[in-house]
Length: 504
Image (cartoon, rainbow, N blue to C red):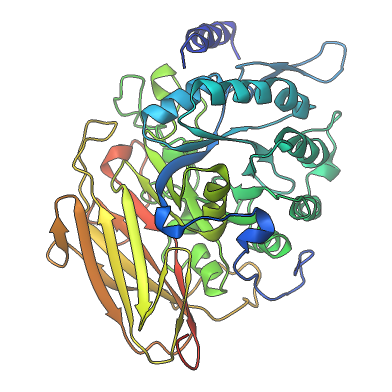
């Protein structure tokens, strides 16, 4: 980092600081696909489902404790340089998250040599201060885990009196960049599986979500640091911990200059080799691709959307504030425990650009009904009525625009059990069952409602919903210099349909 850039960051820091503010134990072994996680086995949640509402949040937000590193002339471990990478205090991030409509946020700083001490001694006390200064925002403690054998992942720690010790115990023992001198033996997939076994045994285990999973990919289905088999291994080892991946990565403002003008060389998400599709990672966006292959095994593998905020684009970075562009909505009451339960159970939809603010999808067979993240028992050959109810807000988004939903897609895929190929990234059964436009739905103000009946299902399946502000039938690769506000999508997590001799 140049002296001028460092000085600028320190000046910015001064300004913002003043603001108020067990099935599968390793690769190569096949095991039954994990069943849906039990909330009680993770953290006891006793909530009236009728009291839940859609709460927007962000599980990937960096503060000034995502530090830079200054070499030690004597050859010792490098010294952490506060605000050397991300620049904002945690209370600043929290205040901006609240300003942009978020109800919850996870502070997630990535590490380096002995960084567990930075989190323990500096980041955690500031998080406690942030909780006091921005009390309306539910704030989790976590980190962007330097994942052994892979890229990064969000680590979300349940809110308990032991949260600081829990994170220190994980980071100090397993984060691949923690040791000094660097130790390549820490950067292996078996070590990540060891970490997951440790996490699943914690009384109230954390949640792990793979971040920007194909940002390092060199092309379509050419995987980088995160491979399909690897993510399957995580989910098999700790299905209540390793629950999913970022569907839409952060750094979506990478194509914007400080003044909001377009940078013709900027790549959305920082995906320079294999671009995003409609702002979403190829592992999520390709119809019948990796995500659908996971769902086709019956895996409860959910997608999210984050800011990955380090430095706002108006300060020379490539990021939006938490909630300014991307939102992960969880259906929950306003508590740490129920939000984390919602993430584990898949009561989640994601959107960019505030295209939608509510998305309720239900599947009904007779008197039985299930919603996003749930499971519906269906008699073979029976009808399933799918109802999609969403809110297309009339208010302007952070760009001063009022995007409108142009189309909704109802997607169906077959569930056939564990894949013979652990690196499978295709589900050929996945299809768009129906595309809906304004001519097909009922609208009442901001609310859009559409209903469709699926008939003749003969085996286990899943349904999921996505939508867009544009006219592409399938999301296409995002060119350099694309305005992120002009290409918006939302994705709902699936509902599983399980065949039974008689609907229960």
